[in-house]
Image 1 (cartoon, rainbow, N blue to C red):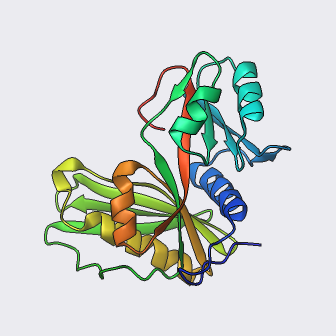
Image 2 (image 1 turned 45 degrees about the horizontal axis):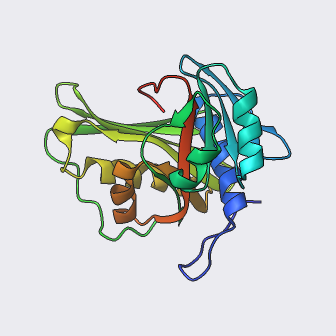
Length: 230
C-alpha cells in the first residue's frame, strides 16, 4: 500500500516512502526490479559508474560496515536515510560521500504549490509524453535548444519524480516549476495520490516552492570515482 500524506500534521511512514521511492526510481531509470533483503533493497542499474545501488531504509553501523567491506568493485552506490556525518564513519576504505546532503521529500497529489506556476515564457516549448508508466517533460527553446526536463514514474498510487534539471543558461525563468507542475498533474490524472522524490541540496528549494516537504535526510556514498550522474 502507498503511504498517505494528507496534511502537515501527519507524518507519512518513512519506510513506506522509501519503498515507494526505490520502486519508482527503478521504473523511471529502466533498472532491474529491486531485490528485497533483510536490510533493504538492491537494484541492478547496469551503467558505467553506477553498476548497482543498495538502499537501506534503516541504516546501522554493523550493516553499513558489512556491505561496504564486501562490495569492493567500483560503481556501487549506497543510499541511507541518515545525515552524512553519521554515515561516513561507518564506511569501509575505498568508499566516500557522493554529493552534498540530500533529502527524501514527499507531497500529496495533486500538489498545492506555495505559488502557482506562471505561463510558459515566450520563446519556449513544452512537450510531455508517457511510455511504460513514465511521463517525461521537456522544455526547449523555439530553435530546439535544451532548457529543462524532468520525469515521473507512477507505480500504483505513488509517483516518483526524477531527473529534474534546468540548464544554467535558462534558470530563474520558472521552467523547473512548470516541469514539476506538468509532471505531477499527469501523475494525479493517472491515479497517483502521493509523490516522493530524492532531492539534491540545490533542488530542495525548487521542490519546497512547489509544495513538497522534507521527510528524511538522504545520504549517498560510492565505491570508486564519483561519476557525473549520481
